[in-house]
Image 1: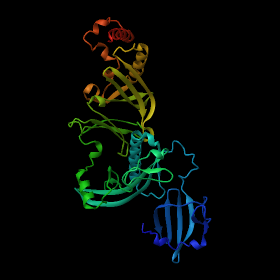
Image 2: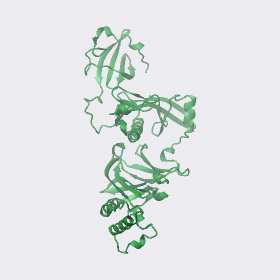
Image 3: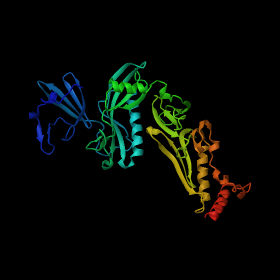
Image 4: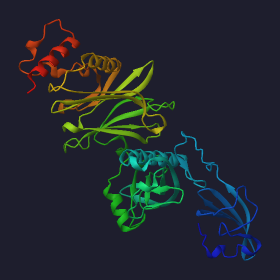
Length: 423
């Protein structure tokens, strides 16, 4: 911005009041009580200088060899501590980038935030903010592409700062905003007119235009088809985040041949990924995802009936992506074992099956790896109806049942047999 501490050396402290309790100079052109102003960025416009902080904007006017403090204004994001619980995602005052860039940055940080909340629950993250976002470099021709590079710094607000572990260049502010990476080292990559967002990269030992940064960027093999899951397929579209615009659903099969996974990716109407989830063939990675329609409204349905050595945990979750994250409308978990250690709750199991089957009956398969086999949609969900198929998988089990036995009767007979034979 061209502003240094030397530039501010003539700010005219002799005209201000010094307050011992704050160890700060102060005048009364402010809309807030006395306090300490921490500058994070700034701009100049003629003889006017604006310094931006997390909580306020300080405006100075050039006066001779120094500056006159014109105003000290709180940003709109400052509250009395009673923050709206739904106000997730803040952007620092002074960020001035194209709307497409800001939308992509917010979606990217929201994704980082979701991952951090899941991976570090003890840190109790409750909000995120973009503290810095600005253009930093343009590659006029990198492997045939013109690329705009934007630099970003973001932070998470922790309600348990004592559990936050700092490493590398990470920091945490006095008011518990935590930078989870190297500061000012996250870069967003766009095409020439900023209409297309490729991805974000973190580079802490170089800058755009440097040999190392350029080599790393070239290694990404960027192409404008990459956003739509190169090697993947379009599945369907639906307004799954309830914003009035349809999102598009894609398979990403780029890791399929390596045996890792297939990923379901969802992009908003601007082309930015807002959600993704994997399914793989290893037992622990079995997953089934469906698009469910109830009363004309779309939902995602995840169903994972898992069994390990006879111990079973069946869970379904019905959710949307409102606000950029999973909003759960209905969920239930059934736990039991088929080893005969205790009698099965047959009626409870039937009730659970009825719940999930009612949802599956109104669903379309998107992606499944259940049973160690991939199934790709859009397709009927009929083959995934819960009937507790293990009831008839043993060599002697079919003889337990009569042709007209319903599901509850089969469960009761199986339970009696398993408990009797439990060694």
